[in-house]
Amino acid sequence: MNRREFITTAGLVSATTFISACGLGGGDSDEMEQTQPKPEGPVTLYYEFKIAGPAIQSMTTEVSNQANALENKTGFLSLSLKQMVGESTMVKNYPTDLKGALKSAVIDGAHQGIRPFVYALMIRFDSYDNLIASQSKEWFKNNIEPLLYAYKPGNPPQKTPIALDYYQGIYKTVAAGDANNIYKTKEEIISFLKNQKDIADTTYRPIPADGSSNGVTITVLNHVTIRDEDTEIVNQKATALLTTAQETYQPSSNPDDGNPGTLNNTFYQKPLTTEIMQNAYSAGGTRNYLFHGVWKSVGDHENSHIDPRFRKAAMPVGAYVIAGPVEPFYQTMILHNSNS
Image 1 (tube, rainbow, N blue to C red):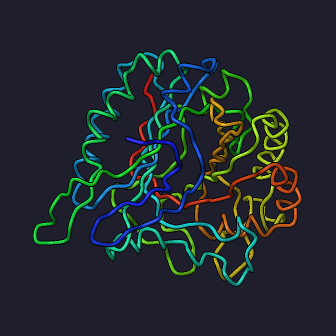
Image 2: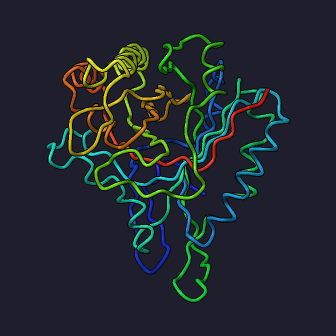
């Protein structure tokens, strides 16, 4: 199965063809692992995949079982499964009257049968060697990949021989932050990755019309690509942006880190966590990044992008981006932090 792109190929769940939200080049990680040095420090095995509705229950059961099984694997830190629900408009600096316009467009289209369901899966380990020894890639290939096929509508829906593409990548965390601190050392990042702050719900909770909190967290994964030669400078500037994101909120006079954001105001509470995820491997002279944030609401996230302080900090990073930004919204369906 071709895994050379961030979900750009077409997937079918009826007779209609779909182009999904995330359109960045990737490179086959299995091939790159054979030709480039292995990453040092904690790593994340990351998947993006499309799936037809009839296969979702089987998929989530498989992921839940694997999360429990990984507790017995050396170096396991956490696993999270996130369902894509929409897309940020403010990350693209669209006019503010379009703020949150696509907040649930992905999941709404999937429920209408006009596009596939899309998920992101993160499997975290304290080292590349322990990740590989866990056989997590083999588990995905043997248990999840067979579920990724299109279905024709009917009663019941009929599985077709059309396979749905997916993306596989290995990422390392450059820096991370939460309400307490900014984390850069190996030991700090390991602790951060085994203590993810998502509020999960296995049942999708519709996003309120005003973008306010619905009781679960909203994840953003900002997909960008840079030139490989710019990796070091981007890491420096992205870490500065992460620091700004963890320190700014609106209004700044609120001792509780800002007022709750909605699409009807300009307030926002700072993110619960932020993380810079750098692809461990370059591809064709480029390198992918995922800027991973967990927020209390869509309103909080969208309003943060309007803040002049955030925009000023983002400009030095944006200058190096050659593809993106594309920043989908996700709801966390499964979160399993290591008990060890």
